Image (tube, rainbow, N blue to C red; front, side, top):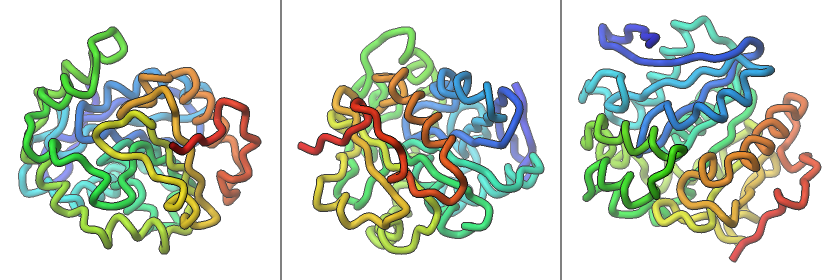
Length: 262
């Protein structure tokens, strides 16, 4: 287990591979561990990091840092401690929101963002995040299998207050900034069967900036990286391979990438 100290508190992370830096950020349910298959795929060409945010996994249960702003600050502090400069970010749920917020604040640092299960407005987020325990959320969102075991096992490690406090910082204005202020290339990925974060409809997709793109996985729920892992990893590598600055709309979409909005 690898750790760094931030504000004299333990922050847990893991790293695989060599090459350009890439950071994975988990969501409201689980920890860094469900990123392992994607990290293994990316580690062939990238130095892939994944960390546990405040209150999750094996990072400190440090309640003063549970707000969305402090989770974003943790990403910045982690990069400083690791000596990471320009970076690609892949986030899910809470991690997707933190990644987009960090890109909005430091566009000179973030090369691209893959935002999985990103809520484009407050109404997309299930109220159950605020009323259920992390373990209950994992049982609700996942069937038991070897792939989902990391989420189900690590969910009880989460301080439920970290979920509630981070959600409190997600105002409509914060979430809609991605529609107007994001200059970093960003690929939004959602599962069409996600009961926790509703995927964007076609009208919303059409309002996204030209440097963004949205792809829905029609056989996925809240965890596309687990539900359709091979497809997710192929898309991830295609996105990471785009020349710096190119919009994800430049992807030569294979048939399985084509968006189907219902």
